[in-house]
Image 1 (cartoon, rainbow, N blue to C red):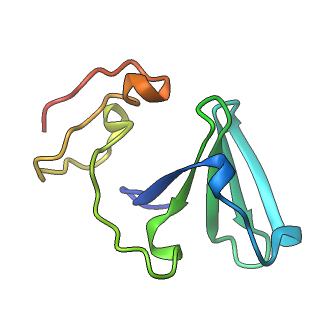
Image 2: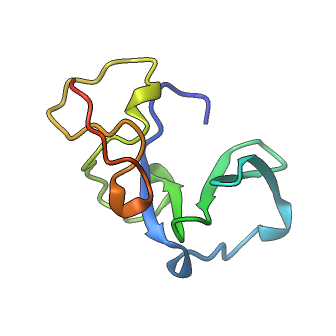
Length: 106
């Protein structure tokens, strides 16, 4: 995703459908928990499938009409930049999403 922060909207996998250009998507499986799909033409991030959670994250700026308001930080234990915004910061993911649920300080 090539940025210190990846702003994404998390959706149930059954609610996400690529409606145009699906045949031009590349796939990179960093882990079995993270299947990244990108445009083969320009390299832009399209979505990240999280099969174990049944969820998909979509870069927030790519959903037309979405009024994006961040609610939590995930994988804050791997941060490269501190963010002091008062939002909850999870070491990995909340327990409800298969993570440890461990919280970190700003």
